[in-house]
Every structure is written in structure tokens, then in C-alpha cells.
Amino acid sequence: MEENDSADDWALARRAAGGDEAAYAVLIGRHQGPIHGFIFRSAGDVETARDLTQEVFVKAWFALGRVQERARFSTWLFQIAANLCRDHAKSKAARNARMTNPLARDKDDGGTEERDFPHPGLSPDNQAQMNETMTALHRAIASLPVELREAFILGAIDQLPHKEISSILGISPKAVEVRIYRARKFLTEQLVSEGVVAP
Image 1 (cartoon, rainbow, N blue to C red):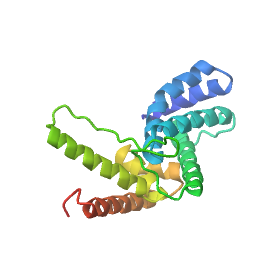
Image 2: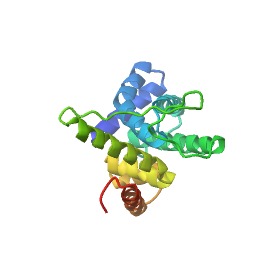
Image 3: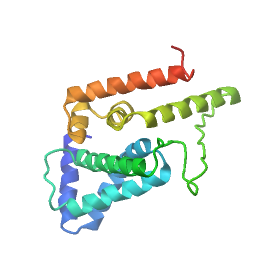
Image 4: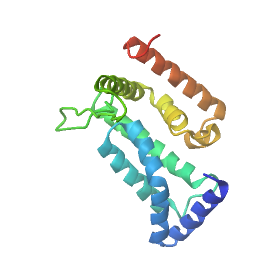
């Protein structure tokens, strides 16, 4: 997002802080997609992502009158999202020791439902292979330590600049680089060990 877009975001935020719900609706429209995508890849299922995304914008709404405009509006939203994802991971770990399966949806604390990754240009065999690879990749991302997972999703998947990621996570750009490197190394080793990719 360009600087003038960021300034426009804050102008809308100031209006929203004064009670202009239409201005806030514009902000939600601009940022809901990226925030939802980050939370989904971090938390691992559709329902949780939907709920936490809503919570991000509720928390932001009530904080608009207090927040200082030091960074991009989107950076501030990602900070809220990252904190909510951490809280969710901690509470889920306390309830259930097993790691989150990103391809599962809770069904009375039971079964799982796998997702397909359709590509119309692939043969059935190649489509099945791609689905298997993507399933393994999502499972490996979910098994990353939370600090590596956050940096990897923001940097390698969402393609945010390291400087912005450092603001979101409260670490240095160098630490961002190191975390993404460690995450890539972990994922490669995991996929090789599962025989998904060649060593």
C-alpha cells in the first residue's frame, strides 16, 4: 500500500473514531481480506478465522480514539490480528495438547474435513498429487513454532516487507529475516521427511 493510501486510511479512521460508521465500513472493505487470510493461515480453520477477523475489527473500532498514527493502519490491524492468534493458540493448547490441523474443522470435537485445491489444467493424477502436497504443506506450516509461523506467513505468503513485519511483530528486520529462513528450513526438512519433496 502506498503512503498516500495509508494516510487516507488514517483519515477514514479519524472519521470513524468520531462515529462515522460508513468510513469504518470502507476500512473494513479494504483490509478484511488480507487480515482474514493471515488469520486463516495462522489459526488453521475457516470458522476460527472468521470469528477472529471480526474480533480484530471490533477491537480496532473501540481503540480508534486512542491509537497513535505511528505506522500504517494496516500494520496496526496486523498487530491486533497477531496478538489474537497468539492468544487463541495459547488457549487452544491449554484445552488440547495436539497441534491444530489446518485442514480440519471441529465437528463435535471429532472428525476432520479435507479441502481440495482444484486446478482445471491438471489431470486427475496430478490433481491428487497437488492436493497431497498442499495438505502436507499446510500441516507443516501449522506445526511451525508460532513465532516462525507468523513471520513466514507475513513474509513468504503475504509478501509484506520485512520492515513492516518487524513493526507488526515487534522485532528487528534482521530477526524477521532469520525467522523466515528458519521457517523455510523447517518446512523443507518436514516435507522431505514425509517424502513429499525430494531431498
